[in-house]
Image (cartoon, rainbow over all chains, first blue to last red; front, side):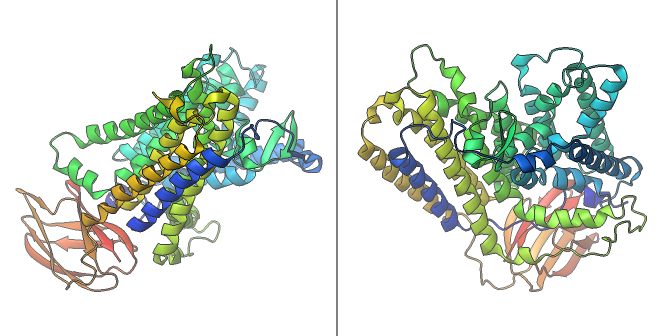
Length: 439
Length: 129
């Protein structure tokens, strides 16, 4: 048994830390751009109207055609079945592709796919297909289910689901062994199928962690919907159409906090602290992940609420209204953190996928491919890319929160009211860069 | 919160930006002193590892490691076992009860964890450049 290999996460060498001067330059650039945006940018909201969108009727006919929809559902179901083969029948070996299929292809691959193509998970979600089949059999409306989805829950279930996923990936010591892996996926599938039967597809749109994540990312794509029409739209305008419901802040906080924790947990200081401590490592890592997510939520809440408001506006309504502006920052973190990991491990997974049962098969002819490691020698390029990703995310976030502030805040607080959120964003950006430098 | 303070004055906002930038610069530039970049061309000293019932040493430290060069590793242990080197490709350093000598070569740059699996600990992180 090769348990030792699989017990410690996918992959070999990790990225070198970025040089200190890169981190400093990035943080200073983010800071200067932030305040330049605040001081110089437009004074009336630009992203809130749907005027500057370009309808795409021809593309929409193709995209919305029943044949396309069915084809996408079939692709999703085939991929799901393909994941079940190594999950159910595969061996508990490092060569089992199922780990990479979930942790790399799904969890990281969802980011570029949704940014490029829009809400991909929604289109291929096997749970939407299963729900459609079961609901049709039982004569239930697949969209509405048996009961009304409680509106006040919003996307809280997805936040819990995302937390359960990052906890499984980053905290659980043996998440790369087949037993816990099977258990996690079984529970996830069961909750999705039963929830969808009870509350319809509305449940999946608010509780499926991957669908909610993918649909949030899709708001940064070029593809939007305006009154049912497919439109080409600038990403920031698209982002502003995000509905600020309950649970959105929690989702964003889990995404930001868990990525930060993933950097932090590899820093030698934390490794030494955990290994040198008499407290149980499980307790410490659990506390650290939870702490990072809560901290991200608190910084966002404090940053958005420390402003003057119109009479009658409750400050507690502000964090969800600004949460969308954290999505570019989330994407910046994800790119910085997972770019090389994705490049290497997606190749590794595709190679292993030809032999899902570890029998020496070569189903798709990819088994004898070799991973191209050349990116591993481009440390400067990778460091520049990371800093550029984090700073770009910061700038886009600052611009979209500026635009939202012009709508939400009273005129006399348009500038001053943004200061606290800008400071919060600078904290996220400088913190993210510091983690890239220190871990 | 004195948020209304800045409401009219863009100049003040720019001033805040400069001051804050200065803080970031001051805060970050202090860092490299504790990060270990000074060992770039140091002689290839033997990396000594001790694995006994009394404890494991080192225990999670980051160590500079020259890329593509053979570095002597000396493992002193009171049992048999192996260390797992998460380089690309991955490597094993077997050790016996007593003193074991190895030469470790790592070709690809990056952070490489060296782990013991019984108990599960990160012995060191090699910063390969």
